[in-house]
Image (cartoon, rainbow, N blue to C red; front, side, top):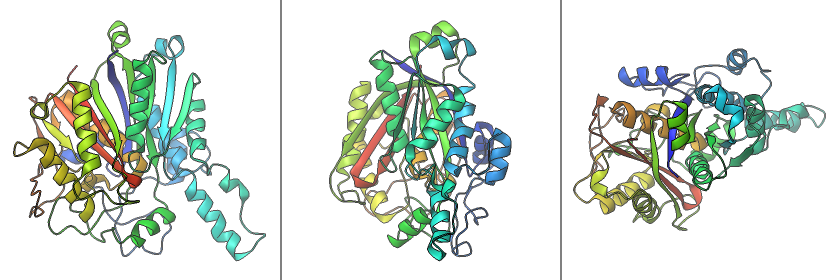
Amino acid sequence: MAVVITGTGIICALGTNQEEVVASFRAHASGIGPVEHLPTRHRDDYVFGEVPLSNQALAGRLGVPARLSRTILLSYHAAREAFEKVPVALRTAQRVGFISATSVGGMDKTESFFKEYAQSSTAGDLRQVINHDCGKSTDFVAEKLGIHDFVTTISTACSSSANAIMLGARMIEHGLLDIVVAGGADPLTRFTFNGFNTLMIVDKAQTRPLDASREGLNLGEGAAYVVLMRADLAAESGAAVYCRLSGFANTNDAHHQTALSEEGEGPYLAMTQALHAAGLEPADIGYVNLHGTGTENNDLAEGTAIRRVFGEAVPKLSSTKSFTGHTLAASGAIEAVLSALTVRDGLVFPNFSFTTPVEGPALQPVRHLHVDTSVQHVLSNSFGFGGNCSSLLFSRP
């Protein structure tokens, strides 16, 4: 059973909806810069991909309490934008699911509680930890959207929301659901930043994926969701179709807790299995949205895998994380939205900056946004800690 994408919702450092995000790319304006809302002692030393709205501003837009975790606020903002594109008549007449991904959950509130609690056992507001569990944001947003047929949460590190989309598609293909809102959300927190910084993979300046001068990633935040729908239902209802989700795969190279194998075995298997599932050859791919974190390990491993799959005939490719930062569990869905726009509108997204290719794979990314309506198929990669690697394939309907 064919699955198509009929709607999207997105919020990230580039903007608070699809139109704003595309406008930032058209202006070649990176979302990476000084942090304003994250309470960190490192605000003057590092740059981040922060959503340009405070919790109070987000809550005001959504009509919900500002005390909620930032994960809930970002998730609801993007999911509501996507769900609004589902025809009203279908929302109750069809089986609808909500599959959301996060790796941070309500940690932003929990870490604030424990900072106060550490100073005094009688300090701290326990209501801040109510939404710590990863499933709490999913349940809150599903309830707000009125989705009850199927609700679940995925947490597989940085491939989480790609896997959420994959699960949604599989449930539709197997006749268990008709429509799924799938994606994910993660906010910036002190815990995640300090953790990545301890691994010594955070760049103090603008990240430079695929460039020989790269020194690491920039952390970002955001949320994105796609509306997955049975193709026949979309045709019957007149829903606007962005693209087909034509193939996908999830693999694990079981190499290391945080690093990919030098041969890029997990990425290679994910890409080749996604191609096989879609019945496509490497030559059919017009653009690859890379995982592209800008770390030494990722760029070498993914670059090696790209060369293994495509040989010398490498398609257009880029890392949009150079604009948004690495949004962890949200990244797969943010890049799925961009990939869907590439298929629908021919928008080919660039690296923010690039000068000298990495030795070895020596990939040359797209440097400027342009329109290429000949692109029929887009491959989007998302690789997580623990070797959890996922690839999604988006094709013309």
